[in-house]
Length: 361
Image (cartoon, rainbow, N blue to C red; front, side, top):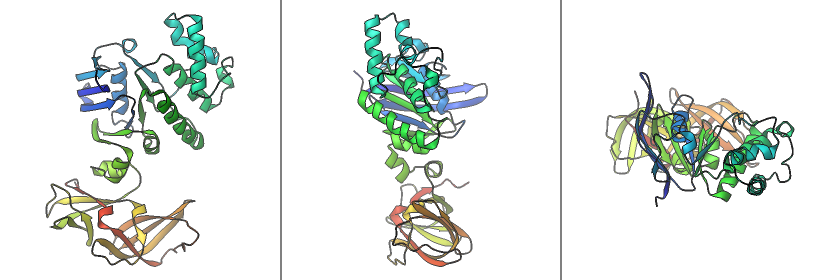
């Protein structure tokens, strides 16, 4: 028995001359919360539609639970789909919405009632089966849509940006609820989103999609701390993405000159002197200090702007003749806030930056 619930081998999808998905390969483990993350038009929804059977691949093979389903219709696959707009039936009660698919399967009334009650408990809405959909809040409707999809016990549940219409506070609450539900039942979830915070909060594995290809696939920590491309570094969280040229490589230490400023960074395989490169440095990795260690970058800079963000302040500054950096500093009570126009010392360790050679056009 395969340990993978979903496998894509060399899958492509073309619409006329346009290639929406370009030779994608990945495997999703059983019981994994897997997110397809990327900007609008990158191909993530097309990937989801091919897994669910609503689109046929132009090339390649799709397997679910070890079975080739490439040419199977949606209702022939062990999958279910939660849409962004939920598609609940307003004229039916909550229980009738959840039971809809079970009645199509002609299960007994007793089995249907048992499964509906089980789902209402799972989504923490017990005893509300007789209510109308119109009586529910936005978050409750989301839970009912998930219950209706899970009641058929699919091997894989696909979710197409189901939280997009919710306000920020409710969206954050529902992220935790979705992860709780998935952890409790152990069903494989494939979550499609353009929201990086959603993917980072919930996912065991994130596949970052760009122009129909998988740029990087890894857990959230690896994606954030060790991006493999400038696109991933810039798309996941905030970063200082500095363009320059590699001036020297000495063992584990590389120097990249950015607008005349030498930036120290840890070496990576494939880099060479004279090569164009990006250096990615997250704003929270930079501190106000006058550290002068050989392994650190340390500069004098001038504050251009200070933006209060509640729990932290984002400082924009420049050094040299034009190199601009952003720094995030937690607003601890003992930290003195900096003023616009103030000269400051900043520093960050060379191993806190990421070298991305060969990507500057």
